[in-house]
Image (cartoon, rainbow, N blue to C red; front, side, top):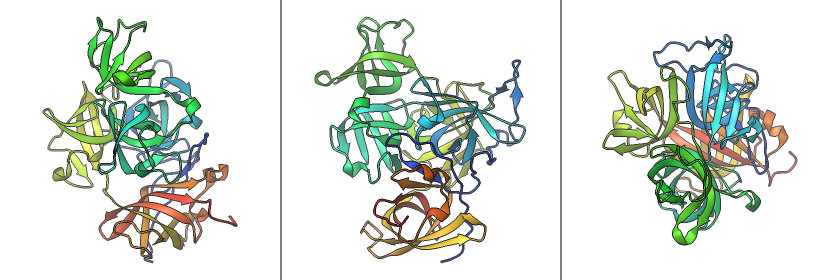
Amino acid sequence: MTALGISLRKACMKCRARMVVYMVLGLGLVACGETADVPASTDGQANTTVIDGSGAPVPTLAIAGPIEGFGSVIVNGVHYDTGKADILIDGLPADEAELALGDFIHIEASRSAEGSWQAARILAETAVEGPIGAIDRANQTITVLNHRIHIADDTLWDEMGMDIDALEKGDWVSVKGANAFDGTVQATRIEQPLQIHRKIVVSGRVTLWSLEQQRFTLGGLQVDTQGLADLGSLRNDLLVTIEGELLPELQQVRATKWRLIAEPGNQVAAAIAFETQGSLRKSAAGWQLGIFTLTLSATTRIEGGSLNDLREGAWVTVSGSVKDRVLEADVIRLKPQMSARWVGVIVGLQPAEQGGRFGLMQIEVTANTPGSPFGAIFDVQVDAQTILAFYPPSQSDREADFERLRLGDSVTVIVSRQGDSWLARLITVNLKPLTGR
């Protein structure tokens, strides 16, 4: 095996019922209490902390993306301390322990004098929850409450071995992800809640609102609001979340409550740095990313590809400034295309001289999958975006590192190709069949 310099980042984990405990591997990320690399502001200079009249830091960065790790939270390779953050999950006060890897969150943050990022507020919203109405396995999509959910190879699940092939029509799912607010969601995490915890939830943009008929649509789903109070402030184009009861015979939901969603990018002053992730869509106005119209200039930098690689459905991270739902892009980073999904065992481990925070691995494929025949052995490189998950969860996994891995571990690996190297995007370790651990 060729020696490669791979760094491993520890992530202090928070656990909850049926939640997978994860750990993040990669370059530049750190354990609890340490300082991570930080994003640059839109003008290329380091963001600085601003203090308001109360003495509290004013957020200088708004960022949106899926959680990659904990201790406090890690998004797009950067650590955000949550010690003083107000956390809201579906509009209700919560704490970090209730967040899960893959939850798509919005963070307002400021940078401390020491250079670390301090989260002031974290918002997590369920995109949609309800029964599956249709499954399109060929295109990796499911339909939930008239919302089309796109599932990627690295979409995270709350149980080991789950994927679209394990789902059936009528299964109840809760979907977190990049919500385009037009009836489409790119899933970053899918859970199957116990029946006692199930509820109908839909987040979207209000269209076709009729006060007379007391109904509107969210991404093509008709919502009946009869009997609800405080409808005077409801209007078209608002971003809202509704809970209610399903009326299958009418293909609609009767809302029992509704609330406004804080619009991404408008939580804080428009002049600050803004970063978000999601799937590109083409419209008459140009490229759309969620609710935003992207504008590119001669100075816009594209990483991981070129202008020709911008295409419908491509997952991108965009940094820039936002105003009136227009995102002026300074940097667009393309996500590497997933190349293969391997099921196998670890047959080679090479810790680096620095100890447990570094290492390499070799995977022997033990199940036939396209492009990876039984018995094939691959060198796997771990980088800043690799996520390591242990099943079943254990409190000890919160402090686990590369040295926790063992020869013979049963793993599933999602990889992408970069030049001559295989890069691991997601590694799941199944501890159940192993003994003597």
